[in-house]
Length: 240
Image (cartoon, rainbow, N blue to C red; front, side, top):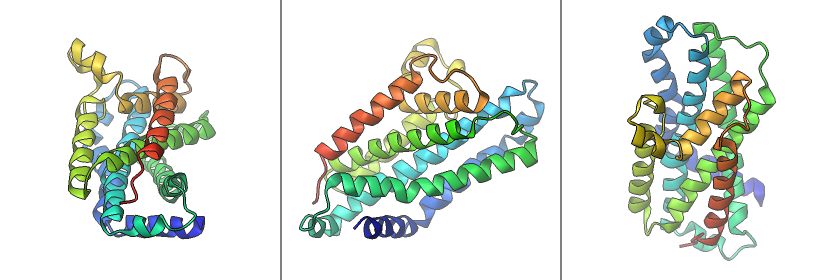
């Protein structure tokens, strides 16, 4: 059962190649466009901090462009209606969706780290790789569950895609992905620091740079957000 669901999720992802292109290609495009800025940076921590931003960007594309839309599409073609007649539970569908995509994200992260090391001489010594992997996985699960919640509360695929895109661009612009939160107006900084993208980016940066991941509210809030949206995704799961 689990193998069949994972296969379906993979096929669903492959069916939308633009999502794969954006999720994997966009962070590399942003990295190369920032090459001059990276070269001129005087702080050795600049490139380290940039890694967390690019990983978060890839995660959000995979979760909002893919997960939110593909689940609504699955409802639209009545696949979930047929699935309802089987022993498959909502949490089965959600967990296999996570497992089918998280391997792609981990592979992307490895390639991204390699490119940043070779091209920009980012140091790979004294890194807590397991911690980075754990925070990356947690961030992905959080955004995946947010995307699933959006897909389940939407009436159709068009509404789901619209809401997912709105959430994606909000987090991209205000949540510290494209623009550093420190450079925003003070009132906007307060809002931005409580957005899921800020939780993810700060936790990823702390994990990669060997800083205290428990400092501030970021990791605890990310875990809380993951649990809340996990429960909501199961509660509001729609088969049709």
